[in-house]
Image 1 (tube, rainbow, N blue to C red):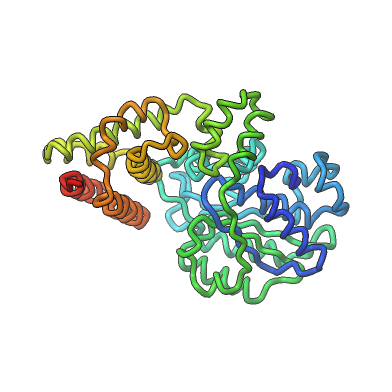
Image 2: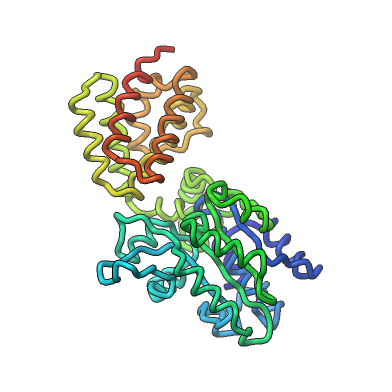
Length: 377
């Protein structure tokens, strides 16, 4: 993969190339930023750049080295969250190699994908994916071997915040005493969840959302969209190529989330506690990753309802179906409750991420919404 294939992020690309030109490549980098911003794409492109024998090729559209083009270079190692399949023994600790085929197939379709898509590829939508201590042991063995090409060994770790504590401690040891010419490239969406000792041993690179213009240009060139449609989608994507592509679909999940949002707000406003209990049980049955996506959708809708009250179309990123609802509901989101409602969803996101009982989390969330929607401007 070349830097040309990374959408936007020109400033980060220049910074990475400068590190190589000035021979200041650190032994560990951590790309941090929102989902869909291209962190993984940047890490892979940089890893390939380090492993490429002819650097100039990696600034063009063409890739001459087949192993790097197919991401099958023997000195390029991937680590990512995994699940335990029913066929695995009770004491077995899953490693990335157990799902190498699925990972490679997903990467070959493009490095802009979500945890949801990865979970689906593994066949574990309703599980919690983690990086186990078994993975740290396997990675240590791989990196202890000599480079097959006599150059760098590159370890790309996707979502290191999902390492369990045993794995994190062993990873810390590897960062403290890296093997010769090994470069760790971590890709994190929630770096604050990592051990402070790990964060202190990596050079952080913050990756911002992709510029709307870059998303618009890529939608036009890759999907043949007209400029107006590409502009609307790029604005709604809010810096995420992943979200922009998902907008091209009819968005059945988005329609489902809109309906859940409408049900929640209507029932909460009407103070129908019994029906809210049924609502919370319905959401609790979705699976944790989907629950997180709904809560993020809720946060987006709270923001959009609040902004809609200003009457500035340029600040609105709603679909036609969403705007139809927001047109009448927006007045119920005001300066007195917009922050409390956002904090409710943020707290629920944290609790779900920590494996709290989903029925309790969402029922409490729904009951609190009764209070917030009763706040009059």
